[in-house]
Image (cartoon, rainbow, N blue to C red; front, top):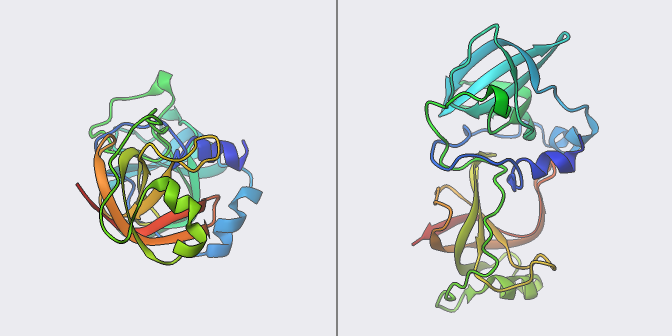
Length: 249
């Protein structure tokens, strides 16, 4: 499976995976090795099926250690019942190298964030996630949202049009939440659309990183520093993004 395929099944599922819509989000973690993050696509994909040899719950998610033909891999899913010795297969997800779970005080060399087991083995989670990576964006290209007010207010299309002059400047934009990916690199990744821009040119969707966890369908006003051509490693590249933004109704 290519890295592109993985990302489309995770975020942005965060393109990315299809996941449930209420819960805790992935535990906060950090890349302890930035170069590893950039080269993960060069490594063989982790096996997502095998025998459960270790499992633990933390931060609203279940960590599952799998063994398949002598190869051990780790998968994180929304909290569910897992038993050591159980044979399981999980949906594709987004892989993050050198991920540190502050809750577990443990670093995983490589771990895949999945929305859960494959359908035929899927067990009812004890707690459904509020928003998880890889959920496909809601079909809201026609959503019309009134533009925010103030000297730093722009539509999504205006931000793309003026990205060179607005780079590294504070901006305000109002839009509808069409996708949420929680707890990735210690942040929540929110996709906004306001009905402006072009889907064909990919200028109709803006990502905001924040500590807030909104619901899909919410209309919010985001404020923060706009950055262009950001590369976070592990395939997370954005033509335009607001980092560490705040969200208000």
